[in-house]
Length: 425
Ligand SMILES: Cc1cc2nc3c(=O)[nH]c(=O)nc-3n(C[C@H](O)[C@H](O)[C@H](O)COP(=O)(O)OP(=O)(O)OC[C@H]3O[C@@H](n4cnc5c(N)ncnc54)[C@H](O)[C@@H]3O)c2cc1C
Image (cartoon, helix red, strand yellow):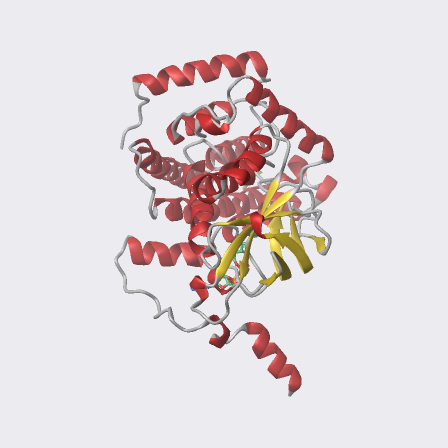
């Protein structure tokens, strides 16, 4: 593991720091707060995100790792990460553009046609168009290959029918990266096709899902006879699985490096220590109580472990290698750690920990964190899925169960078939 910047990286970091110092306001030390990882951005925050992206674009700081041919800076993924680390020290808008700029853009670069690249990449880089990722369905989340939303040929176009769910930014995104079932007669991974869809196309209905914390970050998206031109297809017909793997690989990269960016773990720990300094526990200052100190020490050690695991990801990235299961380790450990830290904060608040909203201490940030954390433990691959990856790829355990790789999709029993047959009885 190499913790140090190379001379070139150090030079890049200095240049980034200098531009940020002149163009952004320093971060309030009390932020980022625990709690709002997937907050629902207001219209003003979305406008701010677009304007900030445009400002970076005009100054040559957008798309650090994008090739110059697409308007980017032509840097390395490592430079992109250094930029994120530096940017985090400043007050910046919520991450409403990252699905497009990160996951979808790299997919278009690798698999898109020349027309798709010139139509979609420049507006993405300038912050003009927001994207969502239309992958999950009511019957296909962890088992993404089991998706059923259909795309059928209709003349030169495609007609899309079906449903997607848990779609982040779905109600304000202008475009979506959509994966559909085009051939149910072949094995499930072989009959999927990837499209780029304008979210204003007639037949698309977006319905917000209300989360336990009252926010609505995610949506259900229904498709009824939605007409999509064949020119919107990415990659070959029935080859959407391999196109999707690029999108999912960049999603994993984002998660795997988040710890090293200083996101989440470290700031949440610092808030917890501040809380322990302010409240009392068993008749004395909480921060002086041995049990509290023991718990805080445990959290600190685990935050550091997480940070160092993220450096393993960074080391691989800086050598030009693909990160493997290290990202799964980070994701699993981070979700559990923040959940335990939030739970401990509520214990420290004692009776007041049960209050919600304006009545709750500390503006309710710890209560909010407890309600948000299941999102983090599910989105981008659940804890169980991460454990399976670690079991198989780190511990060398045998695969959990044989996958029916050659069974045609239409012969695989589906939940809705079981529900329909139960209803019929
Ligand atoms: C905040 C949030 C944002 C999201 N954003 C998006 C988005 O923008 N786009 C998108 O397409 N999707 C998005 N998702 C969906 C997310 O990818 C899925 O929720 C996730 O993959 C889990 O799928 P599922 O909800 O269908 O649960 P399921 O896959 O049905 O899992 C249900 C339970 O069974 C367990 N399980 C399933 N399979 C196995 C197995 N093989 N071994 C052991 N346990 C198993 C799971 O761990 C889980 O506990 C988002 C989800 C959340 C919570």
